[in-house]
Amino acid sequence: MNASMNLSQRADALEAKMAQELDYIVIKSRLHSLAEGDMGAPPSAAALMKANPNARVLMGDDPRLPAMPEKPTLVDFFKHRFGPSMHLLQSARHAVTAGLPEKMVLACLLHDIAVVGLVRGDHGYWGAQLVEPYVDEEVTWAIRAHQVLRFYADESVGYEYPKAYVALFGEDYQPDPYVEQDYQRMRNHKWYMSGRQITVHDIYSFDANLHVELEEFTDIIGRNFRQPADGLGFDNSPVAHMWRAIIRPAKYL
Ligand SMILES: [Fe+2]
Ligand SMILES: [Fe+2]
Image (cartoon, rainbow, N blue to C red; front, side):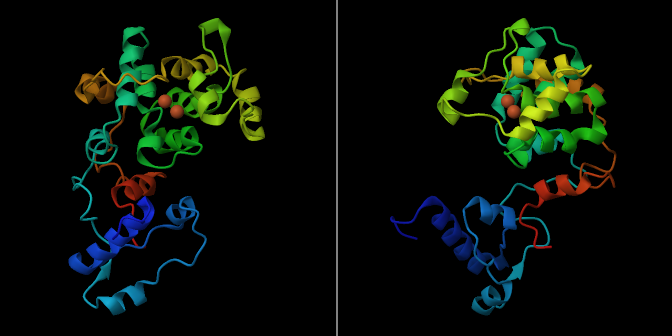
C-alpha cells in the first residue's frame, strides 16, 4: 500500500494482503464492484490461489466481521452488522415522543434498515421486503412508502421537501418516473398516512449529541417483530437468503 492509493485501492490491497496471511480469498459480489464503477472481469479465485495455494474462497463465516449467533435476532443484526444506526434510533425515539402507536415506532426504527444493512438505492423497497414476513403488513407498506413520499411535501402534516435534499441532489432534481407513479398510487392508499408518518419522524438533520440506546425499544421489538425461532436467515422464509447475505456478505457461492 502507498499514499497515492485511493480508498478502494487501499481496501483491495489490504484484502490481498490479508488473503495471503489468513488463507482466504475474498471475491466480491458483482454489485459491489459495479458500485466501484468497475466493469472488469471479477478476480479469478484460481489465479489468486496460485499465489497462495493454502488459501480458500470464503464459504463460512467472514473472519473480518463480528461473529453472529447461530440463530440471530433482529437485535443481533443491529449490534453486529448495522453499525451505530443512530439515525434509526433517533427516528424511533421521535415517534415515541409524538405518541405514535407501537407498530409505527417499529416502522420508524426499521425504515432505513436496508441503508444500514443491505442496499442504499431504493432502500425502502429492499427494507420492506426484508422485514415483510415478520411485521404487520402496514409496517411493510409504510417502510416501502417512505422511500417515495419523502420526495413530496404534505402541508397537512407540516412535511416539507427536505432542505438537505436540495443540497444533496441539486435544485433541479426530479424523482424518477417510477417514483412519481408509485407516489400517485400511494397517496390514495388507506395506509398513506402511515408511510407519511415515517417521513415526518425521519430525522433529516441528524443530532450528533443525542444518543439513543437500542434497549429502549426491546419491548416494542418483542411485541411487534415476529422473531423466527430458527433465527433470521435460517427460518426458510422467502427472504431468509437476504439476511444470510448480510451475515456473510462475501460468501463465494
Ligand atoms: Fe429512508
Ligand atoms: Fe431515514
